[in-house]
Length: 582
Figure 1 (cartoon, helix red, strand yellow):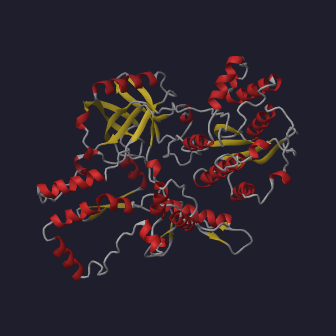
Figure 2: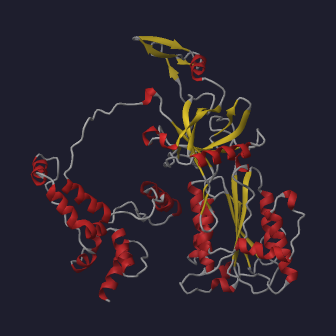
Figure 3: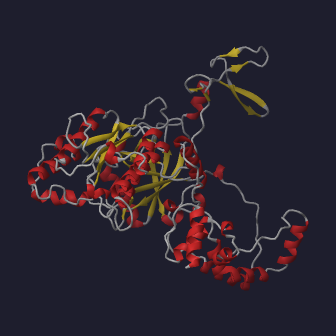
């Protein structure tokens, strides 16, 4: 789609999203912060015309919807997604507006809803026959009115509401001010907060709204993805800077391992699938009687003896002080050594809820620390039942990319420092020293394999998770399973072309390298089979061994020839064969 436009309604910001959130320690508190998205898709005839790249705008819009539904099925199942088609012959909406059809009400993502979008993409369900396409002009404001009604019907416990209007008409109602201005005003009514709804638009405002809403479809997908991660605070505590100076802060976890969801046990013997309820009971070893929680005690070994504690005494042992962060002093930035990183860092940001003026004070501390290249040493008591830790606050300035999108927020990285009890002595006292010839040979290899661009974790997805999700999706939607691309596999052909001879020379410089390798092979700890040489794509094609090459190697070769790689491995092999014939 050359130019897909949308209006976005986002009623949240970094600070306000977390004002009413509970900490994870409070398991009884219900965390209900759902995201609501409505896709309003234009069904006019111009949306059905194939573009220069072969893509049909309406189909690409549905792929966008399907991608979001799939993403939320695996990540945020409580979020609500709706789809509205406008420009249809049929109508289906509460207000009975003509040419507006609610394809999917605001509801949780399900396999059935994903399949419905898939059927329209593959033309198993014909848009023209099922819903019709009209060329009749109608008020675009009715589309926003319909979306507003959908939001109102499902607005409980929602942190953000967004509308993505997808069309390739850059200026709807451009020649008809009587229809255009009400449409823009209705969009602004949804966009603005409740106390701003009385605002009106003049002619100068219209350009600003269009400028904010004018995105390509690819950029739209990036914008949606940026909203996927919820800003849920891990703790909300006071920050005691001085005796009479306290501000509020929120703590966030910027990095945590994404794991597969645990499979739940169910019973399928009846008509419905029922989840198994897990219950834990304690039995006395001697009497075989069921014990209550009051009967169970705990013990620690002390000098070989069992010292018994009650549950209340155990909880008392874990309580040190009221939750809070207390400033102890400052150190130069260079004092924060890499080996002092006890575990992954948290990120803190000011919270105005309990302490007014927290943002100004927090910003002054952060700017001063950045200006003097200092870190802040503090004592952290995150929650009442956690162990206090000494932490370092590393300041971070805000970073914005060329598109004006924030890539790094301003604040402090909260780095846990080790105690003396946490330090472990490494038994290695010395290491073998390499000769200058070996050192220079390895430098040559490193220079040829140097990755110029910065490492961006967004470029690499966990292959284990992706395979799990792909298999789950295939079973749920009754689709054929295809192994997803693993971007972590090295580019063997490129590595061999760049450094093949250098690596061989390096191995020849290592004393007794060949003899040691043979000894390892003779002992049976290494396979006696010699590793097969890495074939080039041309050699593999001539020997009809293209199926032995990996998908990344095939894609890299096609890209080097200016060919866009498409489809699975069998399709890639066919593309390579056609290119070789030409």
